[in-house]
Amino acid sequence: MVLDFHEAQHMLRSIVSVLHHANLNEHAAFSGLNPTAENVARWVFDQLLVRRSIDIRTVSVMEAPGCTAIYEAGE
Image (cartoon, rainbow, N blue to C red; front, side, top):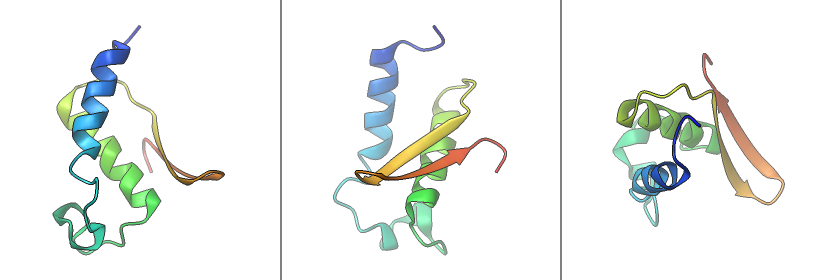
């Protein structure tokens, strides 16, 4: 096990909480960027790396059932 599930859950909640009910077009993280699901996935990926040095490979963001954007390391 690389990371305890509860620690991962807490970390993800704290990361996405700043986006919850926010206007992503006005959020500083997306200044100059279109806040697409792909860009949100990349931002979450980057935030995970900043908060904990773990070997993370991908982050996926689900916009709606059947609509998922994935950011993979190295893109």
